[in-house]
Image (cartoon, rainbow, N blue to C red; front, side, top):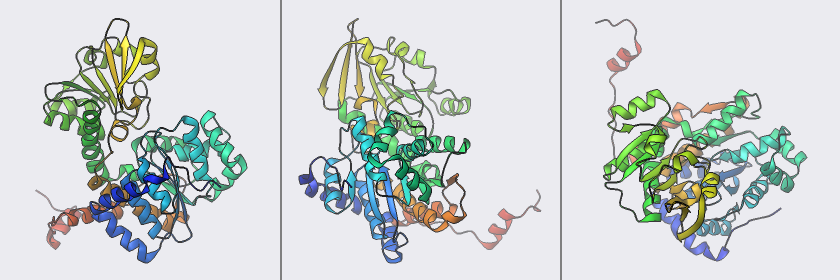
Length: 438
C-alpha cells in the first residue's frame, strides 16, 4: 500500500507553521477537537477524505485523528493542494495523496490509494470519491473510475462499499450528485449534506466564497475592480455573495440567472439582470457560480471585449467552455502563474484564470480560516453523527441535524463574544400555541 504521495517532503516545516497559524484562527474547531480527544468517538474508524488539502483542512484532520480516527486523504481538485501543507501532514503520519498540478490519471490514482485504506467513513468535497466508488460497485465504470479500480481492484472496491457506514459532503456540486444517486436507488450508504447546513449556507458560501473568489481574481491579475463591468453567472448562495462584495468594491454588477425567483431577488437587490448573450457584449470580468456545464460558451466569447477576464467559482471546471476557447485561439500565452491569455484571429485576447477551476483555491488560498472554522466544525460533528447513528439511517442524503447546526453556530458566536437573547417562558408558549387570536 502506497503510504503517501506528496510533491516535496522538505516543505513540511513551512506547512506546520501555516497549519498552526490556521489553528489560532479556528477556536470552534479547537473546542470540538478537545472534546473529541477526550471522548474518542472515532476509535477504530478509518476515514477516507477527498478534500482540498489546505491549512484549514489540516486542522480538521488533526481533530479527527485526536478523536481516534485513522485518516487518508486525496485532493478534491488537481490544482488546489498547498504542497507545504501536504508535506506537513505526511510528516505527521497522515496518509496524504495530493500535490498541486495533478494530471487526471494522478488525481484518480490518488483516489484509488485512499480507497485502498478500507474506509468506514467517506468525507467528500464534490463527490469524486463517492461517485468513483459507486461507479465501480455498480459496474458503470468510465475512464476515470477505471484508473482508481486499477489501483484497488474491482472486487475489493465492492467489498469496501458494502462496509462503509456513511459519509459527509462539503459542497453543492457533490450534494447534487449524491441526490441523483439516491433518486436512482443507487446510493449505498447514508450521507450528511454538510453543505446544506443553515449556518454554513449563510456564512461559508456567500461570505467565504464571496471574498475568496475576488481575492483569487485580484491576486492573479492585479486588476482594479472599481468601475469594471462584472458579470456573475448564478445568483445562489455563492453568486449572491460574490455580487455583493464586488459591488462593495465599486464594480458595476450584472447577474445572469435562469431561475425567475432568484433573478427577481437579484433585480430587487439593485443589480442589472440580463442574459449571457447580452452581458457578453459589455462585461469586463465574468465569474461563473452555477454548478452547471457550459455556462459561458463559444457564442458568448465571440461577442466579448478585448481583454475580457473569465473566472470560475464553481467546483468543476466545466462552467466555461475551455475546449471551445482553445479552438478559437490562434495562440495561448501564460504571462502570470494563474493566467492564460488566448489570442483570437481578430486580434482580441481573452484571459482565463486558474485553468477554469476554482479560482479562489487555485489562484488564492480559499476561504479564510475563520470561515472554515465553522464549516469544518460542522463537518467533524456530522461525522460523529454518522458514526453514532448509521444503524438507524437508510441510504439517503440527510440534512445536518438541527442540534449540530445550531450548536456549532452558538459556539462560533461565543468565540467572538456575542451573547444571545433568551426567550421567556411566556414567549416560548406563544410561539408554540395555535389558539392565540388577533
